[in-house]
Image 1 (tube, rainbow, N blue to C red):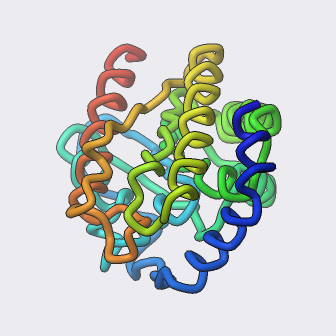
Image 2 (cartoon, one colour):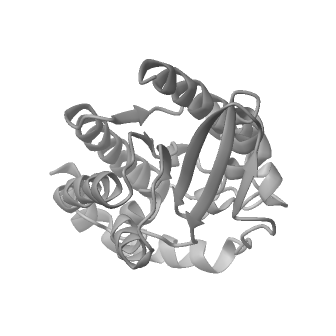
Image 3 (cartoon, rainbow, N blue to C red):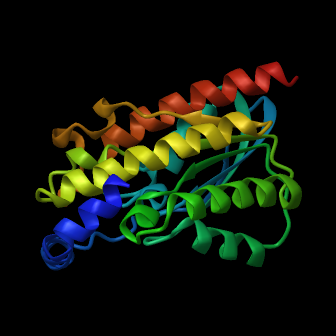
Length: 238
């Protein structure tokens, strides 16, 4: 209800600020580097990283500095890792569902997702967000045989330097609501876990130059926490 009232009261201001941000914030490219690879030795682990521009590594210079590359480095000492990155700038959950359905069927042990920011800015409703995430989980488990899904929380958008007030408050409030829904979805589904990323993950000094995307230090923290969860879950299932 508060978002509906805020939209009505602040609609013209939010719209104007949104347009300004799209014009003023530099459009950073997705970094160069491999989107699939193998590393390490030990027990086999097939990992899929999927999602939006953050999953694609925007804010890093190379994929080695981005989430997928840092995950590969962190997991290689424990596993014989085969990893794949399926991500693109602007992806909503609905976009990723469409992309997954077009992918050849394959098998993965674990998935790390990064979705939600574009759902928030695209004004997707909470009910539609819940349904899309539930459908995403179902597709990953049925079509790709995933045993463990890490649903990454949304970043603290209320702290994004690139966003002026009251737009920052508005999208930040929506992002927190999306997170609460995502945590409940994860708790209700076997094989799913909510990967909460703390506010330190968006320290302004560690963000990319656009004030909107993670920088390499944030990707490193994200990869470290995801690795800890994956190792723990894989140990429990062997």
